[in-house]
Every structure is written in structure tokens, then in C-alpha cells.
Image (cartoon, rainbow, N blue to C red):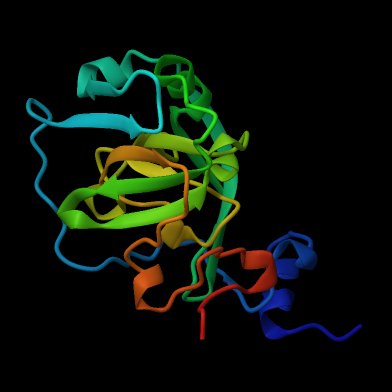
Length: 201
């Protein structure tokens, strides 16, 4: 059976070749990619908000966020630049524990993740409700590094990883879709890696 070079490497590393999405290659490293500078964060003044189409908007300090129930997931992550990293462990807060507190309105169907420096990413609410989606503060058993979004990032493994906004400061629920930062520059709105939805052109 013919296999691509990337599939052969996956097989050599002991994984099923079909686990690698189309157009991707496997890496054990975690490449660092982002626009702009890594922001400086002061946890004493940092906060995280959930707002928009909700009954009870929420603002949490770092201590209040860390006091919420936590969960660990193990997920494969896939970057639009074609690298994939298998079995990445993340720890953080699942949306359901935030949802219970804010009580989304029936009109809430979409999410905009708000990050430092005005960066945004958009998703359907159902993507955030998935069992393996998190508001994460740890990766592979350690706090996130600043390059990878410390103190908080979104993790949505069902999409290319640009949707998993670094340096997360808020989640806004909307009744309508609203393209995020990269989507406005031509990245695909849905970003389903199984369909290679990389760009809108």
C-alpha cells in the first residue's frame, strides 16, 4: 500500500497512519506561532469574563478561575501550517462549569474568544461544548508557557489550532457568527482539519 512520507513517519512512531489528518506532518515538538509580541501579564489585575447572550455575565479573578472544577484531556492538535502533535495533555475548566454560572440564553449560538492585544477567534457554541474543549491553564503537566498562551488559552481540538486563542481574556456569546482576527485575513471560517479547511480562497 502506498503511503506518503508523513504517513510512514507516523507508522514508524507506532501510530496508525490514518490518525494523521490530510496534508499534515507529525512533530514531537510544539512550534510557536503567533502574531505580535508575547503579552506581559500581572495575575493580580488579570481577569476573565464570560458575557454577551447570557443571563448572568461573569467576571473571574485568577484565583476564582483556578478554584473552579478542573479537568484534564488528552488531544491531538493540528496547526494550519501543517504540523500535528499527538497526545497533548491539557488541564483547565470545561465550558459546562462556566455555562452553569452564566446560563446562556436560547439565542446564544456562536462564540467569540477575546484575547490580549485585540485578538479574537470565532466558533459555533457546539464546538466549545465538546467533551475535549477546555479553557486551559496547563499543558503536559506544567503551566502554559508565555509563548503558548500563559496564563490561559482556549483549546478546541476539533478545529485547526488557530481557533484555540492564546492569552484568553473572555468568551462572548452571540446570536450570530462574527469572523475572528485570522478569518478576516482569509483563513477559513470553519477550520475543520479533516476537510482541510485552511483558507477561504
